[in-house]
Image (tube, rainbow, N blue to C red; front, side):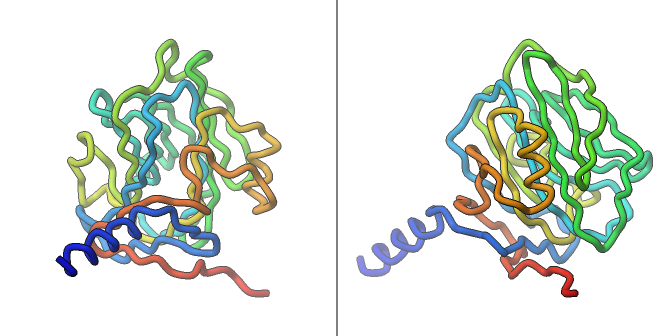
Length: 224
């Protein structure tokens, strides 16, 4: 009975929101299992903004953010296509491509991606610079049981991971909103100023579950 009570207490602690300010997730090796699943009760999105910072030396395709529903495995996905040197937002299994990004290895990059179901337009902000706005999918919302995963790309709802699409490196400051963030708010995020935290995913109050080798460490920054 004591062991059962302790187990329940530990599970409850794991499920409670954690303030990861000044922290990062480290994905130290190529694998098709290591991942972070982020908990959110929200199951319908008429608009989305996702911002994150990542650091990698990968010279292949890799996932940056994966949100899947039972209907769409790529309901909201951010992917780096190494062959074409493009960052690719996928919305409800449809993608847009943005080339020309200076995606250098071994340095932190800040990326924000927006989409609105009314206009169908998506846009990427990369290290403070906005891309053009492109049409990808309009008319209906992202709807259904939501699974958000860092480190792996979902080819099915909560699974279907591919070793050659996994993320290796560090990731930090992941936020998600259920609306399109203003350009001023995005710039504040990029500049690491005081910005409105995500109302769907908030790095300062993050509920998550780690599977296999992913570490929570102090964020590494350059000292001058």
